[in-house]
Length: 278
Length: 287
Image (tube, rainbow over all chains, first blue to last red; front, side):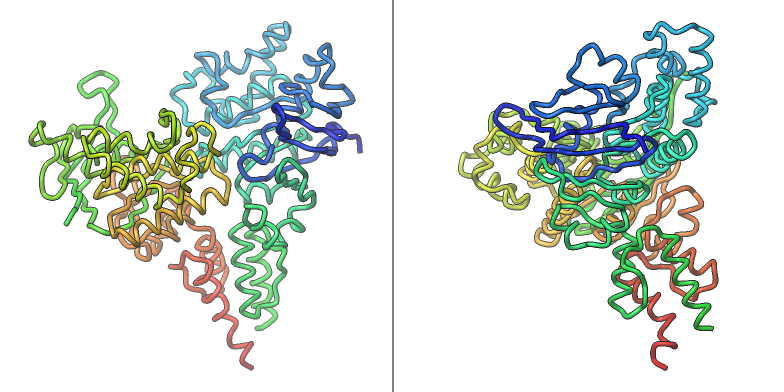
């Protein structure tokens, strides 16, 4: 599979302080990568390096083979890799939902008929068809965040980077936004890089990368990552509640797998154990 | 005894205007001294409006709010004094830090009370102690701190007012897991040492289940449930039907029971959940 994003020995410093050090990273087209790490570990800097908001102090970042430090490539890079930030209020520019979503394609100078198609597709993909004529400030946080995602989708990017998109949302808004992210990845094959503090969200990814002190501390599948609870705690993180429960059950003597990270897995194993017992 | 009581309290934004909107209505309840209450509800359920009425930031458009038996709006000349009894930590409180040093920021409230230098100093030290802010941090600019440290400094500023009731709106929003645990542990420790009322608005049922002893569930501007944690989570099924989040382990137990495993479902901590699940298998294990 082709690598859409590649970090080649990237270091980024603010003054004399290295925020990221010697990062090597490859993200395949169509992959869903979650990035974890405590506040200040360099996650947001990493995100901003991907679409050229920041350029490396040393090393190179490539998006579909394009070097982000080449200014001539920036427009193309940002069409390929779109970004969604934490606070939806900072990302919405227009007074009507559809106009906000149309903002970027309009700036690309696309044909109005093409813009219409893109806006309609984008709004459908995030499930907000009913709100297409609404004023964004009347929407809930979760709905606004989905408008922000639709705005990026209208650029038809191959990759979307989301920097803690659910941090300011309530549980319902969070699960709807995560549903949209998963669908875009599975159904449209869009590469997803999700920065998050929620372990349950990271459990949905194909791969988890953990940053600590500006370096890659862990880079593995969710099951491998969450099966080492002590390491997660020492990295300032935690394991999903279902993994916590499973570890308790293992301590009580039940024959379960310690890499249980989804509630359905635990439920299925327990029901199967009960059947075998009967 | 410091109790906070609402009597048929409600609030309508833009009252009397064509676009008036009732955010809270008919809320009657008492927060007893020493309770640790978790408030949960959807966005728009009235949580934030409710807590703003608790310290007089919003004046109820219907009903009354009492602290220690006095209606806080009875005598306007005493409003200031009464509202100081309820310390409110808003969402993202670190945006309100403004002083040159953390020490000065924490001292800002007590200074405005006209206290002596010694008293101010002792309150700063006490508040910094609760929030585990080390001495060397006190002399730094609040803007040089990490996200979690900034938030602790902002909460210390509220505690330095020695409120009888501490109200926190989503104090862990946007923090990493360690930052979330640190803040909640600090609040728990404050509650246990001071035995003062703590009211915590949270989106995390897991956190509410772990830290609070009572839960207030708001739905559509009114009280859906207000009871002990155990009683409220007995309604886990109804909570889930109203689209509210329930603790992860409670959700797992409900599904197990629906699918025929005889587990208790009025459980909300991983330890207790592990116990009830283990018990259903005990028969086989003791053979």
